[in-house]
Length: 483
Image (cartoon, rainbow, N blue to C red; front, top):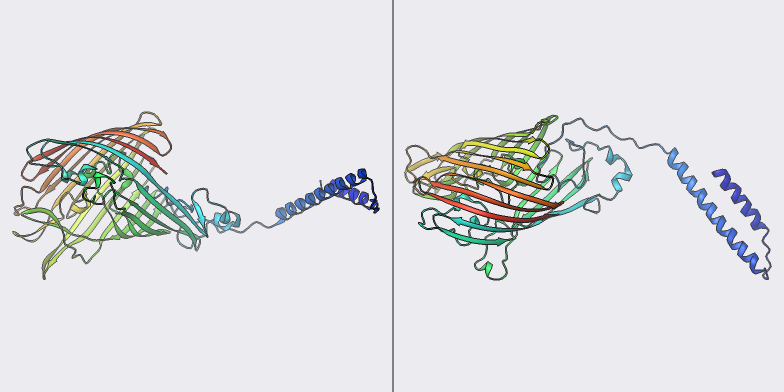
């Protein structure tokens, strides 16, 4: 090809040498000259292309460091999609070199998702959601503006009202927004995520009269570098990977660990499919008086809650075993007490065929009330006849079966339970929560990627220490589009 191009160039140059310089050249001669000039320019471009191709072929390939052999680091399913803006090799430690990062072309290429600001890849995400909630209470009326009207919150099921009530609510305040970043640093990515929604904000008086304004509330915000995560994130004691699909904000809330808080967490890959996580998390002791069931934030804590969790991902499922140790402490005007709180939680998800799975969680402990069901019961009783911190025993659990009827139509059937055993010798008010249990079933249709339409029926019971109960029956529809 190069030889033919040179021949053409030689012929063109020879022809050009014969061009007469007379100003009175005929029109046909001028057209011929213009044609030869264009052919000459094309031949030069061909030579330049061949030269560049030859240089690229003969240039030495870049030398890349070998990848580390660390096992994959467990990622939180709630952050996996949003934190993958700049992928890295699994289990990579700070300072390790990624083979792909050693290639200048790959490092400077545009991201396949998100957008680039300098050397940082930025992603925006979240979803818009509308819930239509019709509720019936058999023994009273839910508090005006109470969050229990918007999602399943067992401690807000009315008891002792002596009458039934119904209400209907349309709400879009579960809409969520987040943004994440990923920036190369010392051979790995330093990542950040900030997320907020409007679900837990207190509605201003009269909000539903006209504009329904809700203040954005902070959910998560953290920095992740290699195996280290610092910031506010889901508690290490919780395994959100097993939470079932539901139209509700949480679903089986009374049967699950549910907590987001500030923490410092380090993940240690042990081998393929096995990871140990160790965390120090924000402490907060929740107490109640023997004669008053209202929760009290003591805010006297001096040691972090310490959590360890093992994540195991064999070929037949996804499992986690977590343990927590914490100091319970209260101190008012120089008078107080301390006690030891602890808990264990096991959870898992077992695939059944291609479209079905079974999810479960079981948790037991003493002094861990605030970690279960958004504080259905306190950690301990203190004050009045309780002259020292008296821990409360807790058990909570749920199970959920997901059924995939087709690729686009799926259902979940779930049940949950929680019980509290108050310390012997301490007489607590009959209004204190003792048990909560119930179940739900739903049907979802996903007509397109990110778009879900679902309906769900839920029945739940709240039981007090006195033995009085209140029941909730709820029919809920949800429309959600994630982006």
